[in-house]
Length: 411
Ligand SMILES: [Zn+2]
Picture 1 (cartoon, rainbow, N blue to C red):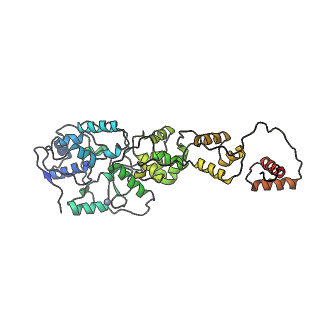
Picture 2: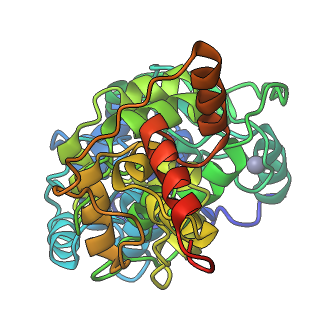
């Protein structure tokens, strides 16, 4: 039965409950409201904040946490514990620089706002709501005497319960309304979850979002494995340069196919080269696109934040495959086969220090033999050229002719 709802008797906030494991701060306030016995939300709100207007029940915590803790006896509950374990702050600040993170924490410790304004509160279907897991609902009731809102379930992108791997159930409500009302999970009748129609990305995405919330990862210095992996997967721009950029269209197309319309519309429809450049340098502050793209690229959190991965540019791989065949291609033919311009072949060779193994376009090749052929002769040569690796008909004819007159042993 109820073993963990320890009660701390203090002058102002009598019956303020101790947060349960992974409990969202708003949920603690809801349980306080129930314990207080007040019939009106306003009475509880007035008691919590001493008459000062406060916003609570948001995905990013504000001055409300410090305000309440100042009314509890010292040592009962620390602001750092509340922020780190009972809000989504660690998730939303995962990609912040150390300085920016420190500023946010200091502001919240001092009872001010976090300064973080651009948080997407809608779920992929565009609605807002509080989420719970029916299996957690039952196990929490057995263990603690009542169900409660878990903080991780409130991540708008989170599709499954990280513990039970079942889809979460949504109670539609606007976050903006939660400041005026208390909605304890115990007041919600537990619904069954539907396990049909789960998508293959839901589990890896759940794991990734949980790692961003709970594990101690920080952006790596000097490299970005997400950027490297997306380039390796062929999502780079066609322009070959030392610092190759990611291509908006390729990433949008892949994301749309992988995640479907809803996630595409919310997170990728307005993708720009600037956003991708910021992401490549860990300068994007919100965690959603990192999580979605990392899962799409097949990365888990340990690899995303782990040692640098090898670059395996698909164009370089293709070039090396052609090199291995031993065939001496004309520069234009090779470029055509690879779907790039002859000039890009030079850039690619320079970037990866590959010694050109193709014939350069020669400016002194200005003599010409004119051959008159019957239709059937022309067709026979054309068919042979098509089967060969030489591409253009004239290149094929010249190669055959030169190899026929070459001294023995030479090719
Ligand atoms: Zn669960």
